Image 1 (cartoon, helix red, strand yellow):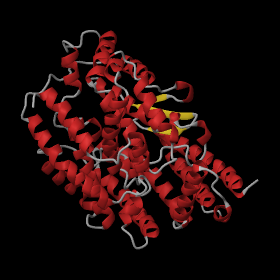
Image 2 (cartoon, rainbow, N blue to C red):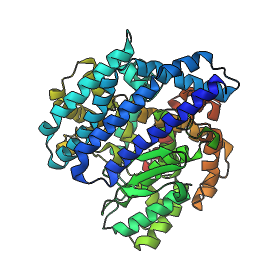
Image 3 (cartoon, rainbow, N blue to C red):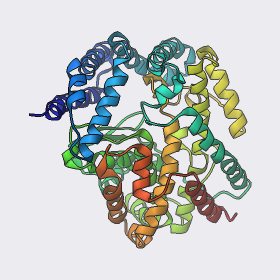
Image 4 (spheres, rainbow, N blue to C red):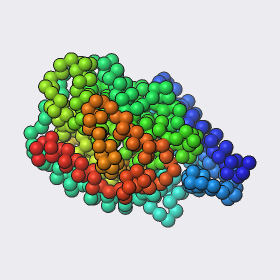
Length: 489
């Protein structure tokens, strides 16, 4: 066997252990009994210790020095392993274990604090999470920006400065579009009560319509919907709301976008560094294009209208055109995950700025709630009414995911680029979607992006699929055309 073969055999075992660690997290979100939290924290810490030790095993460094890349796949595997080896070696094992243990505890404290509207009960553990992540960032960053070191975990190659430039280009047109829409007459809102069992049944039908395979997955409920796993075991969660079935349906479609990426990666990459999505921004591009450009399109909502009438009877919306407008209705709201396409990125930009300030030390954890509320009022024009609609609404900071939030907007930008290319490549797109047939669209995404997993860098992944360097322009053009049509602008 060659050095490369030895390295990849070792790496497959590491990847398999990483999947087991992920399954612990899935179970904690869906089925774990409440009282198991302290033990699960120890289990997370133990797995983190094992994975950390394997990722900095001296043999990995020796194999990397001797291994030769015989093709593009081997070169990409070596690039990923080397990056992980060098980065992980900078983080002390005790710190990695403490982070895993602390974030496991913090997650449960966040959930309890959110339910009880108790910010003060969450801040002490959040302070510990922030301190640990700052310690990790300092160890990795060296002379560079610590926030960039955290961002690199989720979007390799991106920097806070580069994202700020992109976000600054987005903001003016988003703000102008939002203002014009809110000055116009709004479409009719959905009203009434929608049976949970019927919601979940239609949710599963939507998942299957978008290509999710239950032979290698499952759908469960969680407070915060998510996708977990890769390869042959990719699980998603959704949630229900008796008065808002769209929450269930579009959460499901969104998570199916993530899951389809993982299920669509070529089998040769299974349990290798290429066997997962290349970055969170690219991952989010799949969930957002599934949810928005496809799932909220006039063509697909026409099909969904018929499905909803079959499931719920007459629910008060008179026809497909009115339903399309209702699905895409823009209105003020507190919750990022419930936000419409126009305002969603404004929610993300708020979080991006606040977490950068936390990591830099410009914002104290104890001042976070006030800073959030001030920024929200400035951006959205009304006040936060309770913590669960404000600083406690997202799970991410409890899990130490600093640097994660900006990838949501980056994913939207990527989705805009992909949608533009998809419409050119699949002229029958609207006719297909009107029949509830997403296969041509999802097949194009699988062929041009998903199957390659981590073969290319994030930007090269999008450029390969679209034939162009990513830009915010296609997203902005799409939003202005779509919502200008709905609102008569």
